[in-house]
Amino acid sequence: MNNRYEHGTLNITATMKGRFTDMEIKRDKNGRAILDDELFELFTRYINQGDNRDDNTRRAEILGFGGRNIQVAPGAIIRLRSRGSIGNHVFIGLYTYINGDVIIGDDVLIGPHCSLAAGNHKFDPATGWFGLRTEPDGDESIHIGSGSWLATGVTVTGGVRIGRCNLICANSVVTRSTDDYSIMAGTPARKIGYIEPDTGRYHWDASQREK
Image 1 (cartoon, rainbow, N blue to C red):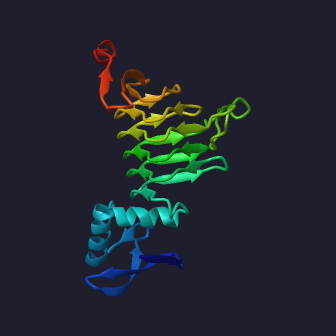
Image 2: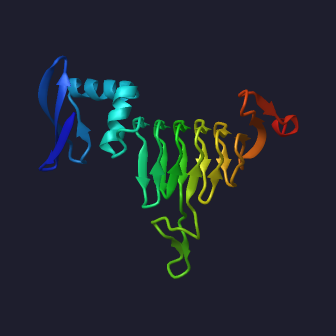
């Protein structure tokens, strides 16, 4: 799909039912898009079906991460700074947000709705509010160790280093660095087990799981 802006309207050249169609998105007086049935169907199908290997790979290529088997699902926002990088064979899930000096190792899975933001909004006494832009406070880079899996809704805060082959359970908030092969869960995340490297077996800390 190609798109371009002309005179305040969005013109789209798209494939619809085996043919190319030029369609103009009209807008009402409040600037909201008015979609005809054909265009509405096109967008709806793409939004629902765009999370697949081919589209995710193409999306990574458009964002400058092509050629290394990186996949970026729909809605993901990736804004790396100069020190940020993404390794080989990485999947970034739906609507995940990655911002700043974030270093992601090889063979990492990042689930949907995760947040990896390296930096903070600082309070300014002169103005009495927090600045709009995130700023580093020391080394607030985030490192995700190779082979790790961040499940749905994980938040990793600035300065955290996730060890190699970590399992970060859904909705965890990781505020401290972790050891290799750790299983982390909770807010703030705590270690509830570890993975045995040679066998892949999970070992659980029963006392932590019950808290």
